[in-house]
Image (cartoon, rainbow, N blue to C red; front, side, top):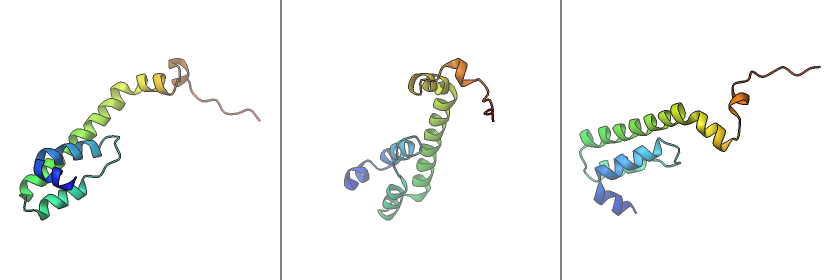
Length: 92
């Protein structure tokens, strides 16, 4: 697996960084360290990982911003009326 990722280098790092900063439970730091230890240019490795993480974070933010109401209604099965209704304190 590590050899396959080393063969693809920068694109693999970008993809892994992108996925790691979304909802997929991955880590990309190990690949960054492996690439640096194998002689890849640090002035290319760090920006590629940074751009991948930033794009993944922006994608997750966009899903939450524009897909939030749809996801709440579709998967949590909370109606639009109940979603925006204020909570009432319990009566003693």
